Image (cartoon, rainbow, N blue to C red):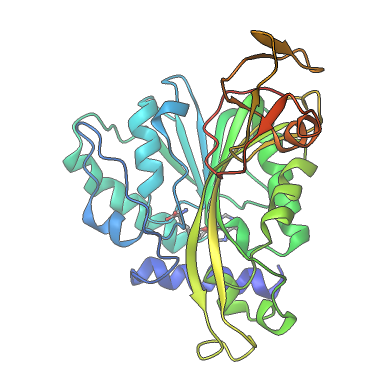
Length: 322
Ligand SMILES: C[S@@+](CC[C@H](N)C(=O)[O-])C[C@H]1O[C@@H](n2cnc3c(N)ncnc32)[C@H](O)[C@@H]1O
């Protein structure tokens, strides 16, 4: 195993033994849903950098693979939506983290009458070689883990995710991103990498990694400030860098008319003389109504004077064309 992966495991072994409020440090609230009671220890071990759960995406017959269980906070919320034996499979290579998550689930069982001990299976498993057969799950999720991987390992982890997903299934992911290439010396800081600060990709590189493994549709659900890292804290930086976090849902579906469809919240609005317009992809655009379009479709349509194309909001919530 590479030394940096060993460092990652050591950092999370410690974070399992002594919960650390400032590790990863998401401000995203957990879901407040009827009869969902999150044990305080799971909240204290919120090591995510966003959220990967939206009940609107989930069906009771979904089977979820959760990579990097942490304290179990998100696995519990997925189980709330699926509620079947084995419907959430959570993997983690760090024994202390698996044990702590199992202990936290025992707390959750006392608070949540709907929860059964067999809804969530916690397995010894590594993102780089998932212990799950191909096409096994309809949903895969990871929160604030893949950013720690060097680019080759990130590609490997994403290839594993798409392997285990059924066709039509989706991958919900949340990670920090950087506005610029980070200095090599900072990237080489294994502790900062393990703590989700120095390994992250730029937004474009992160999206490219996702589409390169074969996801045909990608929705950028959210993008927001995550952490200011400064030379005072990290002398290998020459200037302060404001890292952002992204929440993305990527679907294992074929490419669309314009190739892999990345939705960043752009819309196209037909403003021509007719009631509707059918574009080259076959999509019908009613006059005056914004239709969500992929970035590639937006670039194609922007050249048409009958179209108004709106800017990215980084809040793409589904639907739309091409
Ligand atoms: C930043 S924490 C995120 C935990 C959880 N996703 C959350 O949002 O609270 C990273 C998690 O990934 C686990 N982990 C570390 N290396 C891993 C690997 N190679 N494969 C899978 N999980 C790993 C750690 O033990 C830890 O539980």
